[in-house]
Length: 205
Image (cartoon, rainbow, N blue to C red; front, top):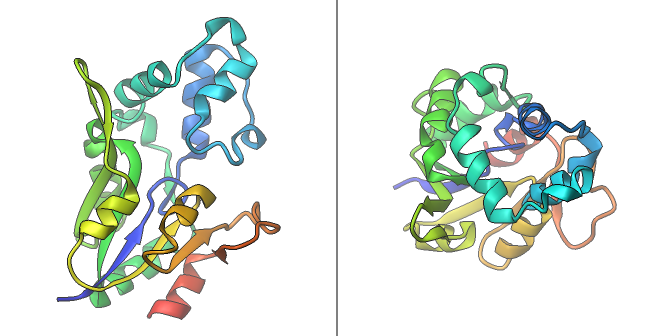
């Protein structure tokens, strides 16, 4: 059995921020910019409400719409490209490790994630864990990245994510690396930063 590596999806494997911004701006008739999204991984509804407070949009309302109308759309992901170096390093890692995708996206977006993985790194990812599942009756239910990582059998080598909150949540159970290619979190304390896929390759290959 190979040892396990765990990778986030958005901002880690694929640069999806522009696609998110385009959808949000078109959906809500606003003009958000990239700087609005720094540090707002799980609070995108706050950005919309900042620009259009009259909507009084709840978090559940926002993410239900995002799941149904953005995360399930291959068309809206056609221009999404891999993070620099991912297509080179990930296949090499897959020969040595069992690779997992762990994402805060909803289960309804499975088709889009599989489409992008199969397009750019086919056969490299052993499985995908989706934190959130939305039911029309029961609302949102979730299994955190931390809990999923704990449930995977075998030796767990490392977890990579572009969210400081996710890294802080897992660093006591697995070596956790904050992926920061844009050098956004250069002043953050108490976490281990990594800035490129090439650097991941240097450490783990």
